Image (tube, rainbow, N blue to C red; front, side):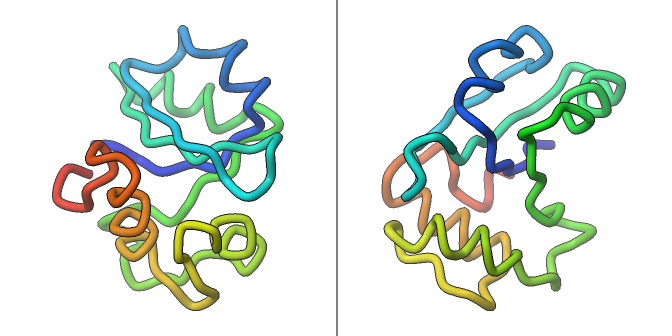
Length: 106
């Protein structure tokens, strides 16, 4: 399972060893990136999500009906994300920049 996060770029760079796989694209905030990540086990995901500077977007399955936070939409608007969008909308917008974000691959 791959999860989407908005992350302080510095935090990502210092903690890539926690991730099994990740790919990122820039956001409208030069200090933050949008990443798609997977983990080799749940303990690593828990460690990652406990770090300061990591913001989890709604889970693609469990939180599929939830909209993303307005502040997340605001820093992703450069890729076409709007307030009220769901995580699948974010993935589709990000996939126009990188196919690794395609919603069917989450």
